[in-house]
Image (cartoon, rainbow, N blue to C red; front, side):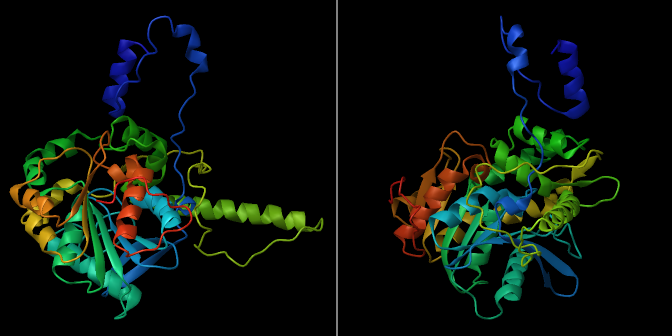
Length: 397
């Protein structure tokens, strides 16, 4: 790729340039295999998807897998969606007996609410409480809260306010009060540096990986779909793929019915959104997108929610330490703990695990390692039972 072509790509798509093959490698270009950036459908990882109504006009998108054991409630970070937990949930549910529930928070993914921009800690915490009440009524099961970034802060708020009285564990991923508050000053600059639109879902996924937002291509192919929407119709990419996926299933059904004339049989029992367990999530079949392409933009305009950012993190350390349940802080690197967390760690009030060489989306970059850490944490505290697939690889201390 010439210097001019690189510059054109950078200006037009906001993509980093493709690295050259180096001296003497020009003759090998034909052997370079193009990476597959096509989107993957959610049912490779979750068993079912459904919408939960709260109040008069709020509908929250929920993804689930697993049928027994404690409920692991996953809360995503700002700008992400419930699909960012796809690989982790599939892996974790194979290691311990549990039920994984991932929610699209207000303003994100396929959740639809009366006020999409109210991302205050109080409002988001109340949303989580209301969704759980809609799912379980007054008979809450044992719950382990797991949150990333903004979602980690909301998990702490939910736990500290007693919104879910049956919490038996709390895990916060890559968020520390001091560093989070310092990073807020540069957040607007970061948001404005992102591309404003993408010409296709494949291009959005490619940007996600090449920009380093998610370093795991498999995770980006399923999670990036939940972060963008069509420019022309305002339809989320998730719902667009749902229509195409349903159409493909109908085409398959017609083919199977033709085969029945030859004597073969089929089972039509399951035609809803329930899927088989995602035990083979390492090698998903790529979802085939339609030939026509559309422009996409971000599902939520985070720049309009700046007034709520400080409220997510102020006082977070003390709230985290005050939660009287087993706690874990999972970080992407050696982070600077504030005084309260440093003392708390020395006193053994929580477990800290560092997974180096990861980006901010730790659970997407290395989902298998995060699953091993969480499984070890839960088995150690006897809040979940291990399956035959579980082999402890991280120290339980």
